[in-house]
Length: 322
Image (cartoon, rainbow, N blue to C red):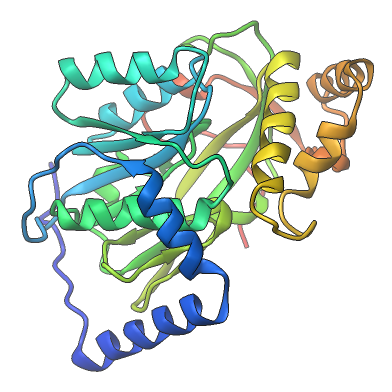
């Protein structure tokens, strides 16, 4: 039985705090010109403008060349009860956009736009998409990557969010490597690191001035935080070809931003590796061997799982959460 969705409203003082937080973030960083460039390069479908719909859950993402896994991820989100999925395709060349366009024609819950900005302005882009979801009535926003399966630890993702008396919730983030040949489907097996990646992920109640961090690891959004309840299975590496493409495209997109080497260091290092080095990395990762240069830490214990078939988080062997 679905819970009665929890309604939350920020106080006037909290709203002022959100405005000041947003103003500082934009003024003290390079976000203002990035946001202008993102707005010029983003073409979203026409979405119905409406007030917040209590309990409405929107999932938003930006993607590029993720045809091997995105159909599975979108299907998973819809099966989890997500009301709408908003995707901005960033110059895909592998059929990702064509798949999304056709899916949107068949399913009114899926909305697809084009992102023509090459630079990896992920914070500005994802914040733009989250704001579009807010304008369309979203109560909760799930900022996902195309290689992530989101779960609640009990029940469905939307069941958990709708009953949550909080404004932001953290999600444990578990890295995986694909053991089978792709594309990813219901029977795909992964090697999963049961020690969560310390960066984590977040979902949050929509707000027009919420700002997502690069990587969707945090959000500048005032309100009450909840720490437990969500887990994300991150299909980080899925084939030798995908690994090479991820690093080289990522490094190119980062180079266009001017961001320092603190950001995306694993992409930059991976892009410098030869095909032979990448092949060795890939085989080692599939054996559960750490490859810190590309953020595959394999802290362990490592377990073989088939998470696409899960309806909620089923990893009994997971390491204790902090």
